[in-house]
Length: 160
Image (cartoon, rainbow, N blue to C red):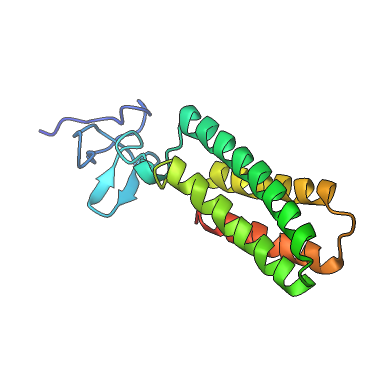
């Protein structure tokens, strides 16, 4: 004589299936296929890698460092640009280099963590640096906007 068993979450559904981890009864509606067998929805919940878990403290640190680097880098490059009067190609290379510096500085300040929020901080910081450069510089060209786009790409790409 066999005993009829029912799913823990669906009490009217008969089942003989158990979670491979917690041994809870599950039906075919509840089961989740995992690499190690069938699991219940609670045991099959994926966890995020620690590298991608960015707390509020890390995010605040990233914003602070990003804005500090953006303002300092923007002012430095504006003064440097006005003193030397370099051509648009070297201006563009310097703006892209500033994007790398901002991305690397933010990454170092948050212990090399990664994630979408840090990408936004890096891109926003690079844009803020460009705004500072635009305030102190009399003329900007289309080439400078292309350099800004490439600089944002370089800064954001640090967090992939």
